[in-house]
Amino acid sequence: MINSRIENYRNMTPAQRLAALAAAAGLSDADRALLAQPGALPVERANGMIENVVGTFELPLGIATNFQINGRDYLIPMAVEEPSVVAAASYMARLARDCGGFETSSTLPIMRAQVQLIGVSDPHGARLQILAARDEIVTAANARDKVLIGLGGGCRDIEVHVFPQTPRGPIVVTHLLVDVRDAMGANTVNTMAETVAPIIERVTGGQVRLRILSNLADRRIARARVSLTEESLTTKEFSGKRVIEGILDAYTFAAVDPYRATTHNKGIMNGIDPVVVATGNDWRAIEAGAHAFAARSGHYTSLTTWELSKDGRLVGTLEMPMALGLVGGATKTHPLAQLALRILGVSSAQELAEITVTVGLAQNMAALRALATEGIQRGHMALHARNIAIVAGASGEEIDKVAAELAASHDVRTDRAKELLDALRGHKSRK
Image 1 (cartoon, rainbow, N blue to C red):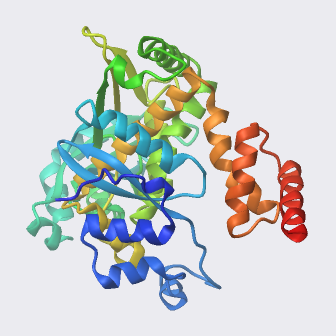
Image 2: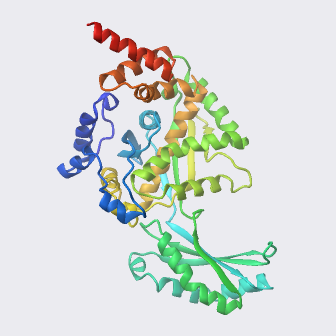
């Protein structure tokens, strides 16, 4: 059983963190070697993944600790370049852990394939003709993927949407609703859409154009919830009640103002995207679906909600599309994506989706807490100081020394880092 509460993890060296991770997650010697070496993705394998390969591009891979979800501990791999993201998620998970952790749920992994029909003068009549052929369409779609059917998935039903007036005339769009099980499902639903296109043309007399999935996976939803006491949110400078009031005000701002909601939701995706990338999934699809879902009411708004319970607790929830897979694509070809899934120990794509949404909720909680108290820059710039030290030319032990000075003075600038580095090196030279 994994224990995600690893003491002093942040202050360890990378080698010490790897050893602690290996012990906590039960990693093999081969897994440890894969993480320890640079270039875990060989160029030869990368050349088979995309076109015109000339090399590989690496991102830092960190481990978010302290997460307890539905009573189970998880160590969560996150691939991201932005400072403070992994630290913030881990710290919020620690606060939530003391309040019972996170709760999650999800729907079945239903993806939509869209088949666009044009060339009909009676689009509503064509809709009924397509619905009358529902059984034939579903049977034809399922005949294309016997493996998926054997796993308990397949096309479950159809929907037909009518756009009677467009600049190109009436358009009728058939949606195939497909349970893709542990796949992301793009290839599966695209193939099914192409398969049923001739049937739709035959029964309507129209012409099919596009046959493609939708990344607005609003039938494939993952949800996370957290409930925090005043005591857990109390800081040296602020009472828990004051922090809760500040978070509720910050959330309300995002709920009503799309300019604020955009940055608010970006903070949520700061937590979600690194998990999606680390597991070899399609972060562009997740981003597109998330922002479309945030605007589904016609008003772009917050993906999360924050409320006050009767007993004075702060309750946060996040519900959004999460089309992730454990099979196919980079999840099967990238060695580190496979290792990330082993560290997580997930058994289904739905479990992975619930974990990922949880990290998004934790990240949002961290941002709102900072905004409601000392401001976003204090903690972020302290962690960003290491980057600035490196840009200024620091190396080895110099990085931590220069970064500490920058953070202590709350003056995180490259020119100031160069001054500190010159002073440090001058002191060494004199010694």
